[in-house]
Structures are given as C-alpha cells and as structure tokens.
Length: 319
Length: 255
Ligand SMILES: Cc1ncc(C[n+]2csc(CCOP(=O)(O)OP(=O)(O)O)c2C)c(N)n1
Ligand SMILES: [Mg+2]
Figure 1 (cartoon, chains in turn green, red):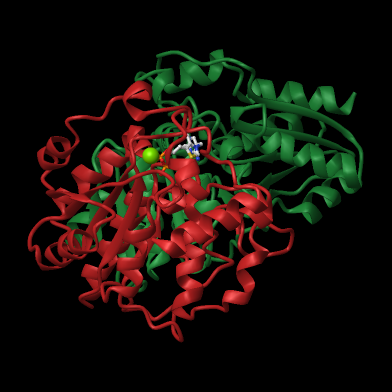
Figure 2: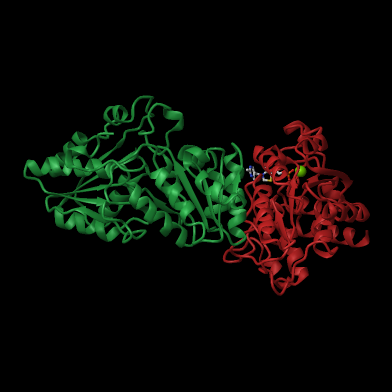
C-alpha cells in the first residue's frame, strides 16, 4: 500500500491484526471476557484469543444470527462478550439479533466487524462492509468505532472492553499506515483527535481515510490552504464539540469515510453542523453503489476515495 | 390481563399453561423470588414472547413481584410490556418478541452456567411456528456441539401459528426426527398431562452429554371452548371480551 508514503508515514499492521493480538493480550486483564466467532477467526483474528483461551472461545459456525444471540446470552450472564465476523455478515445477517439481543437489552456485547470498506480488494463486493456504520448507528445507545491504524485499534480495543454496554468496532483487511507512531493510549471513546492543525478548513475522517486526509492536507498546504484533520474514530456518540469548533474556527468541513455516504460519518457530522454551526461542507465516501473486485488501491481510486478527491472536496467546500 | 389491555395473545398463553406452571411450581426452576438476579439461578426464557402474560403471571404468583401489578399489562409507563423486556421486569431473562432468538440466547446463558460451574440450567419455551426460523436450528446444532446438557428446549406444539395451521404455513414434520438428527434427547408428550410434563422435565434434568427437546402436544386456547373450537385460529392475537373472559374463567375453574 502506497497510501501515506508521500508524507513519510510508515506502513503498519492492519487494524484486524492489531485487534486480534490486543484481544488475546487482554485475556487476563478481563477474566470475564469470552469470544464468539462465525468460522472466520483466522480472518477476524479472534483465533489468537481462541488459541490462548480455548475454554473462553466459541466457534458458532457459519451462523451469525445464532452467534450474536449466544453472545447476548453470555453477556446477560455477566460476561464481556465479543462477537466477531466480517462487518458485512455480522451487521447485515444478524441485524435483528443485534437489535433484540444487544441494543434493546443494552447488553455488554462488543461486536467487531472485519473487512470493512472496499479496501479488502479482490474478494469483491459480497464481502465488503460498506453499510456497517449506518446500520450500527441506527441501534440506540450503540457506540460505533472506526479506528485508523493498528496502534489506535489496540488502544480502542482496551477502551471498548472497559466500557460497559454495546459497542461496534470495524476493522480492515489491509496493512495500513501508522498514524499514532507515538502511541494512542490517550484516545478516549467519543473524543475526536486532532492529527493536524489548520485554520482554513477541517477534514474529518475515520479509518483508512485519516491517512488519505493527511496526504490531502499536505497537498493543500502547498497551495496555501491549511487544514485541520480530525481522526473521528468514534462515529457514535459523535464529538459534537470538536465539530462545532471546526465549523466556527475553520469555516469549512469535509468528511472522508470508507463507507456509503448514506448514514455514516458524513451524515452524523452534517447533523451536528446543521444544528449548531452551519458551514459549507463536502463529502467523500462511496456514492450509492457497490464496488467490484480489484486491488485495494485500484478500488479506492475508482470509487473516489483518494487524496485528489479529498483535495477537490476541500476546494468545493471553501468556494 | 389481555382483556383489560384490550389486546394480546391469550390463546398462546393457555397452550403453555401446564408447561410454565410445572417449571415454576413443580420444583424445576430454582429461582429465589427474593433474589431474582442471583448468579446461580436457573433461567427460563419465554422465546415466544407474545405469551408474556403467562410469564408475568407465573413470576407474580412466585412472588418476584406483586400480583397487583399484573393489570398494568401493555399500559404506557408500565414495565409489563406486550413482550418481555429484560431491562424492566425482574425474572425476565431475555427480551423476546422477535421469534426464533430465545434458544440461541439460552444457549449463551447455558454456556456461561457451564463456565461458572454452578450447576444451573436454562429452559427455553418456543412456539411451534417459531421453529420456521432458521436460527432455531443453528442453535440446535451449536448446543449439540457444546454438549449443553443444562439446556432444555420445550416446544409448545399447538399446531397453529398466526395465519393458520402450521401444516399449511410451513410443515415441520417429522419434527422429533429433526431434533434427534441435531443430536438432542427428544421427548414427545401431552403438554396438558401433568404427569407427562413433570416426567419429561425430570428426565431432561438427568440427561448427561446432550441437550433435551420436549415436544409438548398442546391445544391453542386450552381450557376455553370458545377458542379451542375456533377452526380458523382467528383468536391468535385477539383477547376475549369482558363477558367472554368471565365465562372462560368460570369454565377453567370448573375443570
Ligand atoms: C420474527 C417474527 N416474525 C413474525 C412475528 C409475528 N408473530 C407473532 S406470534 C406469531 C405466530 C407464532 O406462532 P407459534 O410460534 O406457533 O406460537 P403460538 O402458536 O404458541 O402462539 C407471529 C408470526 C414475530 N413476532 N416475530
Ligand atoms: Mg403454535
């Protein structure tokens, strides 16, 4: 992956690998932690935990509905339970089970969906989670996380297990650039993190798009436009104060997400902007379509998730 | 209760009356009404959540909450919602109402009981129409894999679902063979015969190494002629009028 190279970011772990290793590392810290997976533990990386703690790991088979309800039953018995599959299968196949077993009873279940977005590449659209943020945001009181690199994924995995209540976290397939080379322990659920200062516009991004936003900001700086960049790792509850400050202090906001434009990060930010501090906005994301097979960076280019698209969006928002 | 509420599913409660009574008052469900959240309690999940009133009645009769509260059913602000809500009612073990999910939740609880080594059991009551849901069979296979002998599924086999006889909606037979094929100890009983209900539950509690399914032949609306003799099952989800309810109670008391 070449993303981030132009600004000197080093390639790090994928968010799914970081999650899997951290989960296993935290097994003794959280003795009530149990993990349920749907025959994809080698992909979601829950298998690392499963090998270390076989008695606390349940492979439910290719049966996501049952898997989620089982996780709910374990949580209703006092466990912190993690249920994991591909983002698409977990959130789409088991949506009603999430609603009834996790959201409605406010159960302490942590849903982790891997293979989010289109950067999964060759496996194609049936495997891509491009609607997960919208679906999970539509569960009342669900916390929705979309970390951008391996380091912050580890930090947020711990925060997610400490938090009591339902959480959804998406993780990605490819190795991604390191944003938090000095660590991410200070990250808090619900608080956006400023990864670049700027006064002329703000790019609010999550996941892989944070690296792309930083590249865009570097490009815009050459043209005399200084962008603030926010890592909005928590899509819900969204950091309203950070959005309002961005709108008032920089006057223009662009959002960037590896997700459909419907119901994801952009929609959540736009609602706050409209209610509290109207300003010009532009949106980068997947535009009302399914993607296709291809190499990750080919797909990102074809479906408009590039540095150039973010640069163009900032220019639109500043017009 | 449903008559006072003006809506609800009395016929679905009546078919389950012996089963629920045997569980709560036949010595099977170890539940201290003063400590309904004790970690080592047995659990009962009303997976066919539309039969919530009989669950509420059993919990009240057991002393988990007062029988005076029962008439609050389905009223605004009242915890006794149309379908069970685990966050609002002590003794309710899972929020149900979307059919097909209770057995999976029960399996999760049964696995937790095994991890806790507390010897506790989980009983799940499902409808027969509810077995149309594929998730039930996902749970059946998974419970067998985990040798969940502390999990008991009881099927209220009343042969009716919402829009008519199950045989017309989606045939289930051979039903016992399906559970057996999934690795479950399986009993077919008369769900209105005390001895048979108690006997099957006793054997389920003794079974080792695999879960038990009890297919209880029941009659939708049991005890109330007006409902039982309704060929179209048009009483599904329909309460009796006040006078009909009075007659029904007299009929049940005479029996
Ligand atoms: C997933 C889902 N689909 C549909 C319904 C609507 N519904 C409520 S009761 C019922 C019939 C249930 O039949 P059965 O399981 O046989 O229960 P019983 O005969 O004991 O009432 C239906 C379809 C529902 N509650 N959940
Ligand atoms: Mg029925």
